Image 1: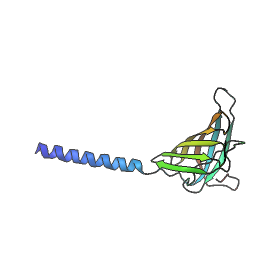
Image 2 (image 1 turned 90 degrees about the vertical axis):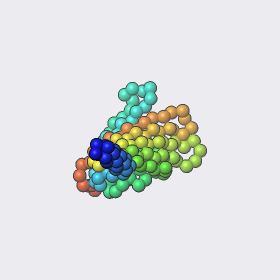
Image 3 (image 1 turned 135 degrees about the vertical axis):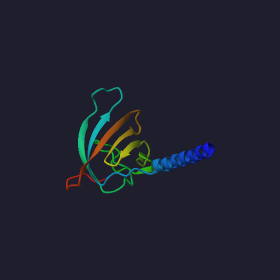
Image 4 (image 1 turned 180 degrees about the vertical axis):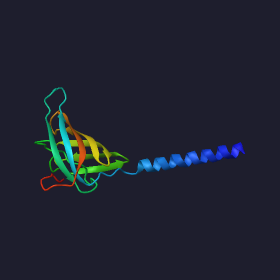
Length: 150
């Protein structure tokens, strides 16, 4: 009888493991509404040179095109996102402007139902310079008229 119990326990453990794996693969969805996003710019080898700001961002649904670059004077504004991938709480995509020597970026985010953290590594086109935009967003409620909409 002990063998039957042990075998049953192994089957249950395997089933639980498979269920946990499939649950882990389900994409995390951000709660629709307004997010207060702290934006920080990290510039390599220039301590304290990056700026900080806060932005209210309205997200009505899943980030179909990715989350936007929010820094001031970004050369990536209006450039399309591609290669959007989400597995569980991990979201990644690339941003590339058309043309030669244009900027590009690789974005990686961790999502939770009411918040996100992300890093957008930007390579400036035609220059040997990179910078990283760091975003931390927290859900704040319903969207308002003045909120930024991607």
